[in-house]
Image (cartoon, rainbow, N blue to C red; front, side, top):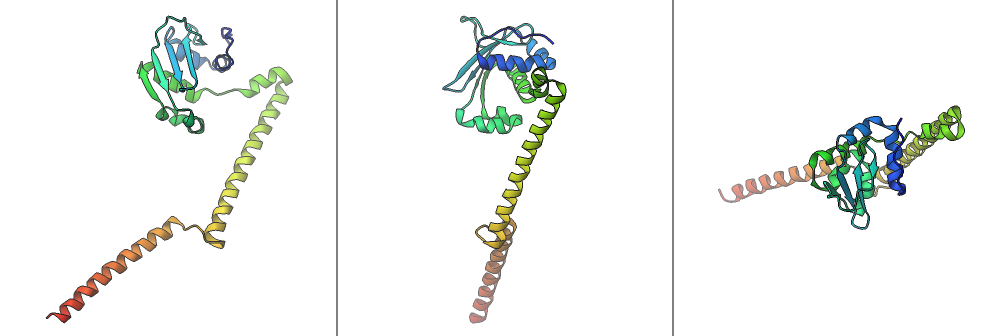
Length: 195
């Protein structure tokens, strides 16, 4: 495993740490060595140059930007929630191939918490801590899902404040049928009145 170049910005250092754990991501980025990407969130603007070994570094001040990726800070929760669709919330100007590589790396780059924890507490403890953390997250998600289902059932069945979509659709179909039947009946009555 290669050691990433030193960089004093915490965000760059964090991303380089993740890249050091994922050689495939380094190889993808190294294919664009020397190119500069600007991530522009209006209030926050980050500019990185890809090094020869696939890590990020600060570009020289006179280097032209190859791709600019603009996003709204208000879209960050949506981007974090659905990384596969993250690039649908951004505007890209410049090198599309470089932007596509950044997109692929950002979607698939994962933190290997177990690897990092093993350096601090040992392999066995790291495995158990990560498993406990995963079980905790799964438990919270299951509780959230059950709570949502129970609230929906309560407001649909016991204290009807909500209506199921199928019930609305059935009601709409019944109203349409009744309207059509009334129109036919009105036409028949008019025919009987005016022979």
